[in-house]
Length: 119
Length: 111
Image (cartoon, rainbow over the protein chains, first blue to last red):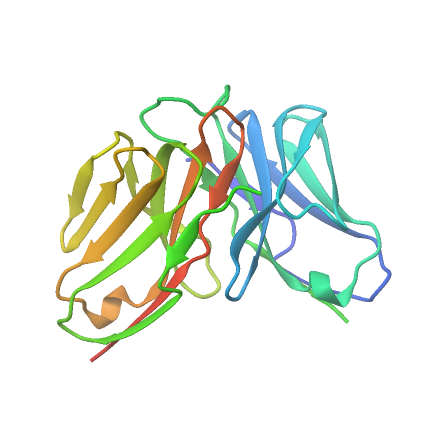
């Protein structure tokens, strides 16, 4: 079974701290994604990566950075955590090696989520 | 910013009623997925629709993909309390690497 593992399920951090959220997948997937989920706003794309050392901004990248030094690991970094970054963060991966086109379906796998509270 | 707008945002209905949830975008999608998410859990895939105009049925749930591959709908017949949850549409935007989610519809079915 494909496994996407997020390093921490629940974290509490102080304002101004540097926060690392780690995500590891074990199926050699090319694409990895970070989302955050807030009530009434759905799941919003922060950053994604389609190859090692490649990254692209999603819809809400401000206040975040990412690192993809190895294919299996995609890290989300909050350089200086703020209270408005309190949220649930979800990592995902997908084996799709090219831009989305006419395929049988976009297979995507999710981690269990990380609940971050910034106080 | 490419968006997937879902409507309605909230829906509270009585057991046995029918309902439809809509998912609309100005972007073209390779395919669209529908998920259901329970509190504290990640999204669980319900169905994938791939071809424009496609209709798929999953017991009491009927999913349709728009002809232009920009929109989709989820229809539930005779809703039951077990259908309660957050419903999300999502998909890969054609010609990009991006995979985005809809804004979500929170459904509550009362017994």
